[in-house]
Image 1: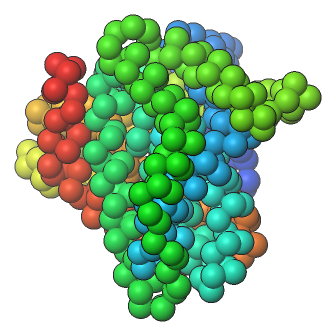
Image 2: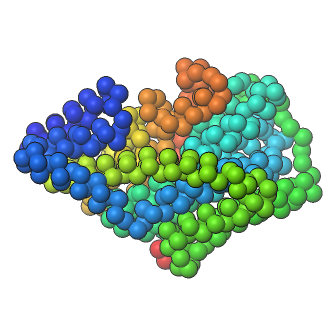
Image 3: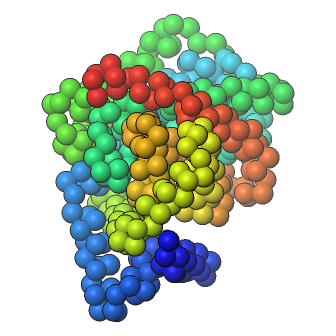
Length: 431
């Protein structure tokens, strides 16, 4: 194996990150430096820039700006408070009721908006102050909000599953969407179990038990929001429209719903569009740079060499998956989810494919694994949003985060070694 390109890639990338260079630029510059090892500077510059542009030339990627925009519309359109009201009638009377409400609302909001940041922002702003009034520790509320927000990246529709489909070379988006339901719900249930035990131990108050009339009323109020899930996922699975077309329909439906709820007016649209454009620009720059690095690694035969090295160590499926999960957990601590998926999918997917692991199953393993990284410093974007909204510090949130981390790792372990959790639903639809 030729180690020089790999060393240049790793050392330059880590070095650039350590001096505070933005992730996208670190990826692009380290890719260019790696190319300089093999070819002259002018072709190296042009190749990397061409690969960035080519990486964005995909119809499937058009779904991302539409889903981002629909998420912004939903966040501003009164959907979050209706979901919270519905969740409150379901679990408000259980131990740690407000924490459970946060988790269920985050699962529903994340599933509808497809954004962990939007979910953390909405739930933290609305439920955080109420949890404090009821005697909950601010840090515990922040920890619950941070970890539960990531469930929306597994429960579809999810932008990151679209990114994985692209990186994997064509794994079915419909199959990935269906595969995310059970792992996402499982993660949420385990988080609810831990939150309930913690709340009971701390003696937090429980709310009033709701009658069936309240449950029905809040459910009816939330139905228009929940219908978006049926519209998007049902349309994709039923072959009525593609994921990209579904994302455009989600924008139109969210906009109409915002006007019906009277939470959005025409004067709000410029701000909403600008916020969505900024988020899209960041995501697309990361995708383009990551696609260039992925191409450079393929050019230097790095994935093939790593694959051979891993399979040379052992052909035991259990051990290989343990190694890959440990590597991804470390990667998630230092790298944002989108570039991690684009860079490491071409490295690890050939390995697990040789072991007979379904690409859809591996995609769910990878995304669930990297969700944990969103809750950890120094790059955990959801962690910083959750801590900022709760007006606390990372150091204080770490203690209540640890048992919730354990719940997420248990969910990851179960999903990794029980393929049916991911593949049962897609198999029902012959996907």
